[in-house]
Image 1 (tube, rainbow, N blue to C red):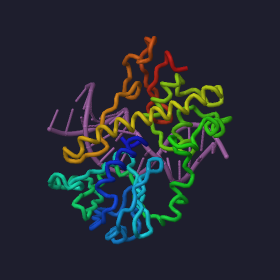
Image 2: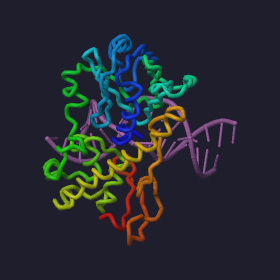
Image 3: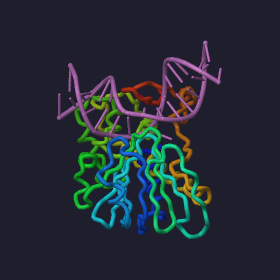
Image 4: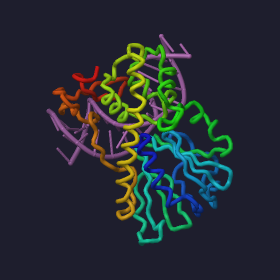
Length: 283
DNA sequence: ATAGGCACCTGGTGGC
DNA sequence: TGCCACCAGGTGCCTA
């Protein structure tokens, strides 16, 4: 479930296991994910202290004491499993290795962090920390939706004159970072905008209205993720698994949740991906 | 430059 | 039980 809120939740969950700790051993079980791993990745990670875990869009960035930054992307199916005893409060054994455990970090605080990714759309790379933002994967990403650079004027400017459906425009990471299929659907529902509506057919006012809505949707999701994070320590440390209640996503043929709307949620396909929306109140 | 479609992968589900 | 079609949270790259 890795859109921005899920990635942020994973990052938060990794902090007690990794920040300030030394990577005692990095076990790399295959040569690549979406792309080949960087040269000698295991060796370059071993012995490094994780100074700080940051997030940019859907990427987790781990700044290391070696002047390098580990970039992690979860793709569609990537998971981070934490086992061991990072907080020193309980004793948890490490679970048996599972299929698709591609990279395993053993930390000097007893924590083990396992990157598991069945579909292997995820990625890892090592960047020079000083120039990390210039990395090709990061350089052309738009503003963080929860930061000051994402505002009404920005959205109007980047969308001006575009002929693309608003759904596609919001999925385009150059316009705004971190949105994925779920949260675009949810944001458009709240804004009462139909996903197929073309950007150049939307009033500036309606485009502006999307900004606080996007912020709210993401903030609420992060909050929900944060709360489910509590179980993770007591249980076995599975991150990135929670249930949200969505207004439209995954609710095809169910009743619209908008007040005073008796519509039914529909599913259409746009550029190969499902869009869920209410044809009655989203125009 | 921009818009749309494909490709990369595995696994789960539901129908026959 | 088997087989098949279809679906899934992303995104770089290729084509018009």
